[in-house]
Image (tube, rainbow, N blue to C red; front, side, top):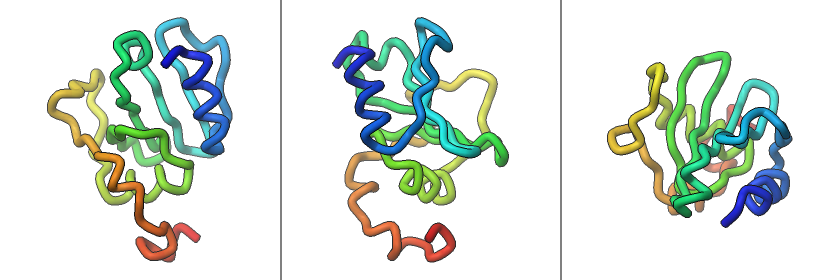
Length: 111
């Protein structure tokens, strides 16, 4: 998947894409949440996306692009304090089935 396709997938999921931030990174934003897509994710076709809560300084990785609401739920459940540099081999990694739940059933605080 190329960068343009990833950016379209971010928009389709409800993220605002920050264009022109860096050639090595694609960023989607919504309020205090971000989804970061490093260059190797589209070059090496590794579907791994970093979710980040700016206010809480926590992050986690996901195997699919979640909606912002799903990202908030995942960060609440799996977020870890963010180091200066992520090691994607040891960070929390979420499989797509973690996104298959009805968000309303997970936590009413996100409604």
